[in-house]
Amino acid sequence: MSWIILILAGLCEVAFTYCLGNAKGSAGSEWLTWISGFAAFYVLSAVLLAKATQNLPLGTAYPVWTGIGAVGAVVIGIFIFKEPATFWRLFFLTTLIGSIIGLKALS
Image 1 (spheres, one colour):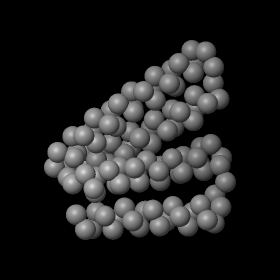
Image 2 (cartoon, one colour):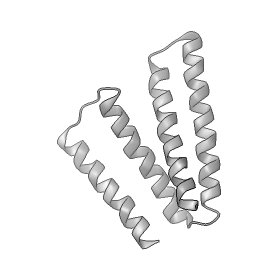
Image 3 (tube, rainbow, N blue to C red):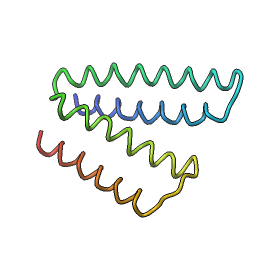
């Protein structure tokens, strides 16, 4: 169950990144809505991470959490915000995913 909570925490990190990306191009009440979403997902992500670390080693949980967020942010950046998908960006994204899998395999 702790791994599911950790994955949900990582997905919340992806969600707050998405909200932040949308807030960047908005103003007024729309900006406030996106920033509110950012704040809510940020807090929820941290709370879920804290809950997951009650049963998982911090040295594994934290890198997995940040890795899910990093991979998700890059994927959202490429597919939603039309950022470039260069060879090196995808290469290092692949190595990050491999590292996350390695940490999970060792814990």
